[in-house]
Structure formats: structure tokens, C-alpha cells
Image 1: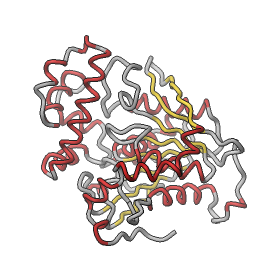
Image 2 (image 1 turned 120 degrees about the horizontal axis):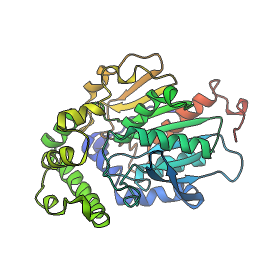
Image 3 (image 1 turned 90 degrees about the horizontal axis):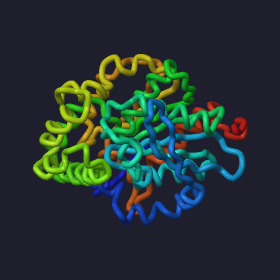
Length: 337
């Protein structure tokens, strides 16, 4: 496929980051995603230890090439535009697609009493194990966006220990160093922090209506910034006593990815306003890890033209097909069931 080479306004990182999720693009996504949406059914997953996560599973009407599990970013969901766009492309390419909601994302707030936090890796590993056991395929793939990319990479690094067989994992603009990402949100264009504050508060309001005994209703009204929200919720609603310890728990710089044992691919951009490109040089060296960095694209944008078509969706399908068919000839591969 052609390289990602946007022109004009589409070289602006903020335009890329925002256009990828606009209502207009969502309208353009639906025709491509309609078959996947129509085939999707809602599934509640047993993740072990009494935890449950919600997802949407779309199966091919005929034999499938494999199953791709997608994980959204922070305060996104299985219904986010990028999830529908990527999922629709992969479904059209012949893959079953499972769109997983993290805890307290999408319509899942009722499933677990305790709040979501980004260190809850075990329940995501448990969800992937249940998906693979419930929908067995010879070819299982995993991909995630932003925080979902961070989760996907941590799952891949733990795959051997957990008994998971993942043929390829793809992280799109994954969070590497959460502390630096938070600083970028606080010091960058105010629109991003405002967006996440609003989305997080809305989610927390939904949760407290379901579980008033969590007791943070009055405090939530006083919290206006991400720093204020983290300073309250981390010591009071996670096992961590400080923001620093919490961020370290899901930082993937350094040795965190040394245990990768299957092909793993990261797609990042040099102009990401949220995830700093310099962070990727701090990842562990691993023969299974490949990092692909584009000059443009913003944060999970990769809008290739003014028709709002996605370069990323095509690249994701290409990466997965290349893993299935190393020769580049799909006719030489066997379908899995």
C-alpha cells in the first residue's frame, strides 16, 4: 500500500487528531462498518476473580480468516469512530472482530463495583483468554488504540505466562510513559484536557448513580482538572498511594516489553500532541518488536484525504494479512475456524 502522505491542513496534528472522531467522519464510516455492526452481538465476559467486561462480537457468515480483538482508548468505547472504522475494514477483509470495552467504558458501568484504573491488566488478560476460549481460531490477533494500545502491548508481553496464543499485536499511538502523557495534556492545547475532564466526569457521574456507596459524589463537583481528579481518585479508589506509583504501574518504557514472544508492531507519529515520539526510543529492544513512525498523523488520526478516509485501517489490515500470508499471497493461506 502507499505510504501515509497527507497534504495541506491534514499535515496539522490537531486537525488529524480531531478529524478522526468528527461526526462527519462517523457518517462516512457507517456504510463501511454496517456489515460488522449488523453482525455484532453484545457479550459479557467472565474475566476471573468476579470481574466482568463487555464487548461486541461480529462473526463472518462464512469461514473466517481469524479473529481480531480491538481495544479502544481512554474514555472511548466499542462504539468509538476509530473502532467502527478499523473493525469494519477488518470485517470486510474476512476477519471476525471483537470490540472490547474496558471497565466503566461504553455501557458497562453496572458490571463491576470498583472503578476503572489503567493498572487493571489482569482482567483484560482474563477477557482475552475468555474471548479466545469462546471463539477459538487458529489465528488470533490483538490491536489497541492509545491507552488500549498500551493494554494490548502489556497483554502481549504477558501472553506466554497467561497461556495466550496471539499471532500479532498492533499498538496504535500507545501510551508509553503515562506521567509524560499527563504533562502533555496539561501543558498542551487546552482542548485535549478539557475533553478528557468532561468525558471522565461524565463516566464517574454514571458510576456513582449506580454505586452511591463509593461516596465521591460531592468531591467530584469540586474537581476541575486532570491533576485534581488524579490527586483525589488515585489514593482513594486505587491500590496506589501516589500519582507517581500509579503511573509507574502501566508505564511500558524500559524492561516492560522484554517478554514479548510473538510479532508486535507499533504505529506512531512524530507529531502526536499527546504521546511524545521520543518515548518510543525508551522501549525494550526485542526481536519481535517493530516500531513504525510516521511524520504526520497526530494522535490516532491518520486521515489520508479530504474524503476522511483512513490510512490506518488499510495498514492494520495489511499488517494482519502479512502475518497470515508471509508470501503476500492470500490464496496460499488456509482459512481458520
